[in-house]
Length: 215
Image (cartoon, rainbow, N blue to C red; front, side, top):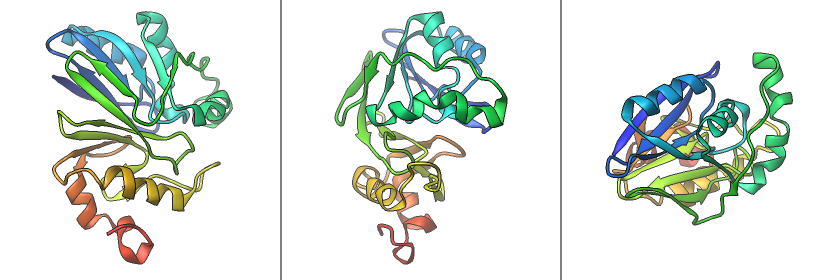
């Protein structure tokens, strides 16, 4: 398995390249910017891009998606509850980067339990709304890790004060969809360093009983 993290864009988003060493097929999670850098990494690993997956539709997680689509023919996947946010991508990005390119074309919508595969790698889609209505976590049970987007970070959780964010929903999502994973599963978040389910269960202050979260 090939796994490379690229930190991209003005908000320093973690973009993940996930590839099969067996088939040479790959997927990219959260291509927040830097399409040329992502394409170069794929070429360096000898990988052919099949899927582009956004954990949610905030601009800093998908600015490079359309360029990757056009360069590779890969399919772009997004949860349907974030389609309104995708439509507002250009407006949301203006304050940060000026005029962005066009949003990607959605080729497939992500439903609860959908599995996205490249070779032997399978990512299970779990709906984790709260940061945005259509936020998802992608779980690789074989690799024992979860791509949590902006739901759960090392020592923190995603913002809920953005439009359509909801704290109660976010905490419930973390409790039911992420903390139910075994403690040794890695947490690969949308920003910042990696962690594990067990570490966050024990030490994340936002998940303490006093904050109203799971324990």
